[in-house]
Length: 389
Image (cartoon, rainbow, N blue to C red):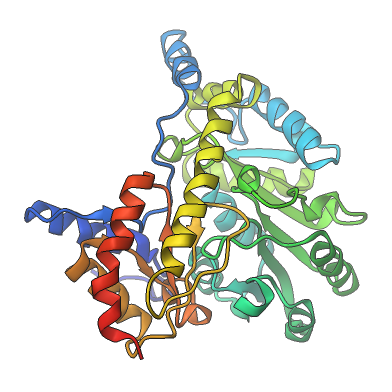
């Protein structure tokens, strides 16, 4: 069968490939500790599941508007207005099956062939994948450990050309756990306004910022009308399998994204959207407990990684990822990650799974129990000490 040439430009997520390998080893009887996949290991809060069940029983199983049911759009507008500190109208909200479609549809709607899009490297691999797919040019700006894995705004400014159309920011960040400061956001906003750029602000870990307060670039003067804000329910409410997310943009762009939803998946399941209303308006205690536990695990994993010979790890500011420095070994990070899985039974990712800027690093998701995290560190020690330079 003939395949379109554009398919050669489409990437993937290494996390799912490593997960498949780890599951294959488990099928052979191996005991594997999973620190590769980025999803909360908690159940969805019961009140949210009950809301979906009630919606099913009430017959909320039919088509709905492609951009989302009005009740959820209103709840999202309320939530963003309160949490981010700028007014949002329901017409500026579009609901999608997961937050990831907003990345795809936002780039598809705003970026032409030959345009350039700046993305953080290391960063979520879907960014360069989709940029390539639409035949635009991904321009990476490396996030460096000495800058706490935040954009160096001077380097970002130097990467802007007349062809630049969009800047993607992600804070708190996957894979490094970094968080942009308010001053960073102000300076990035100044660049966006000066060069007439769109900012795609990917914020699914907004409620998992452990140091300082999360703020959105969309709240800054002159930025609401040029920002695509992305958020969802997967991380805050342990709803990865529900596939429920949303974007906040101008009314015009939200309508265009809804049109792309119409042309691809029609709409987001109605009963799942009712669960989203309960998530935003119902009790938040279970979510808050989960976030507190992630902070506790962060401290355990950072201490453990820093105890390993040849390895060091700065403290992540948010999300549930650690990004340790593995340049102290005489083996590259891809091979090291493979050895840790094959010989130690711990599934981790190489930093290069997130771009060339991740060379020399590993990514561990600490969305696992403290007991398993400590066991993983113990298993890693005899593996990594063989390769200390």
